[in-house]
Image (cartoon, rainbow, N blue to C red; front, side):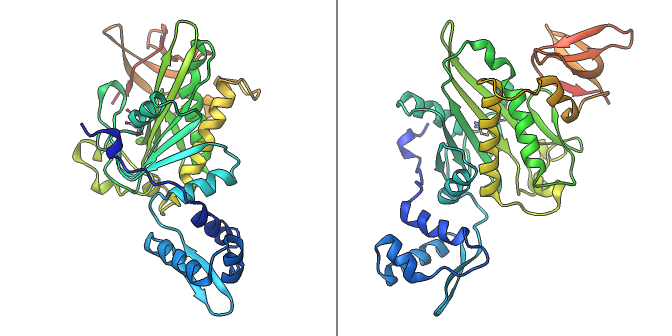
Length: 339
Ligand code: BTN
């Protein structure tokens, strides 16, 4: 097992960020090299050098004599400065630590907490070597086209508040992502999966530490298939998984997606843990449920139960109505669609 110090964190750099802010804030204009030089207290050749570095990192920047610089294209992979730019723009005040490769963003979040990093903060990565899913499963995390993200909070409130957190996160994330793929109906498969047309494009894993009467930390992890091509997925998931690119028909700006997801997770925290907003969980959940009216099977106390899913109750349990009219509530675990 590699030591945490072996993972390379790429930090947002102030100079590069200042240049990027200027370029991104002027999408239809040229940014003068001499103004940048003055802002940063650098020579024109030094600015030229910084722009060269950005080009090496996948930014496409036009340079025109007597006009300046213009950003034509962002890199397609995660970039620490871009995540920072877009999270700042959305008003989310949270440090985002970016690792090109990590074992698991949830594990790194735990390590950061044990090194006393103060929450909230987020860990983002382009590749996980030990990505984990629910119920001891692995999470396929080899492609940099996707997002592997953990967001950490230290709420210090009674543990019961956690009960709804993943459900609220699913609701806010689903709504945020829907704006990127307006024609593809994004849904939540109770309790922790995001689906489109019957295929999973994201999974959520919430891990928490509690004392007897207080929730100490929440590590909320999400694996989101953004721009990957499902035809290249491993055969175990090829038939059941998809990506936003596949359902929406075009590639998405990965760094903007990452920032919107972070913003959505913060909004879920505000709603669920801090109690902001007036919408009820049932009201918010119902239109997004992929299971409503579907016959599903769940395992409860070692016993298989089958019924038609009609929604959730106020505790977040899934309500199943069997063919004889008996109503049962599933509080944890997974459900599968009855073929
Ligand atoms: C599931 O559907 O089983 C949940 C998958 C959660 C995967 C994410 S990827 C980022 C974070 N780090 C992990 O190791 N797991 C979660």
